[in-house]
Length: 407
Image (tube, rainbow, N blue to C red):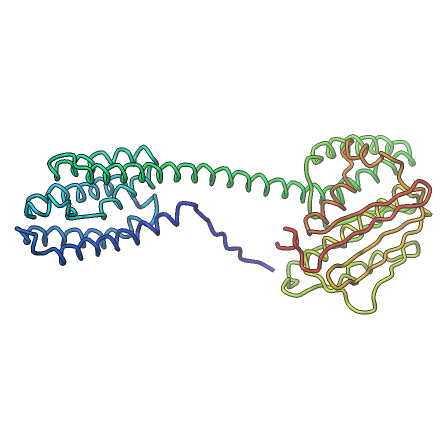
């Protein structure tokens, strides 16, 4: 069944742009409110009114420009800064001397900081320092002399904008690092998935061809030798990763038996699957299945992966414990988890054999079993005393915490 996946791109700087948008609107209203409350201190109120009309129209009309870094172009930033600086320089022409001597606000007031902050968010701390310089010069010109409060405000804007610009640069670098890490993780998991598929299908067939060819002799022996070489090469290629498997092949004395645990495209994934139905094909004269009398529902991805892990364990029983070995599958439905135990009466696994096999690129246990359970948020425990058979205990939570169960 076709599925539509919605990809949402998150940006660490996007909240800053939204905050800047609100800041510009609020500071515009604040500047107009100051003008209304201090109207008596304006000698040329007409010029101030004309400036505020331009300021309001510009602020509201350019709100889309401060929604993202792509929309906030260099030309917009230049005009925005020019409007802020013009308002500062016009202040001495429209107010009386008392307003200036008392340290009254400029025409744009703290709206100017929004223009500088746009530079900081767009280009980092260097752009912030560049934009703060003309604002500082305009404030000194407006006051006529470097008064303490003027210098204080100038330094505050300078330091704050540079600090925010630096934080933005660090956030962008962190975002790039995180994106790269997620890409590597996704590629690794996909590589693991393909490798497990290859292990449970192609590698198994190549190994079977090699063994059967050696028994038959003649041209079949040469074919078996070539299949063995390809198996080694392919194991080396895929030994770096693994994940989701759909087929488990087992060769018997009379030929190969392939158990298929495939995902059907037309099968709905919105309801749980009964694990018993997926494990039933593994039951045979040599494999006993003990299951609860009631259904064992699991999310479809978790149920299929668990069934494939059981198949991989049974394949190991057949290949390593011998053709006459018997196996038992025990399914336990606990309140919070499902436990599946696979036991056999074979000779067991020699100490250090698993590590040796993994070093040789034979990743049946490490990836086809443990890798699957790890992706489901579960665990796989292998107990194999020499001469006493092997027991593989598979546990997964009913609400999967792993990424395979969330897909």
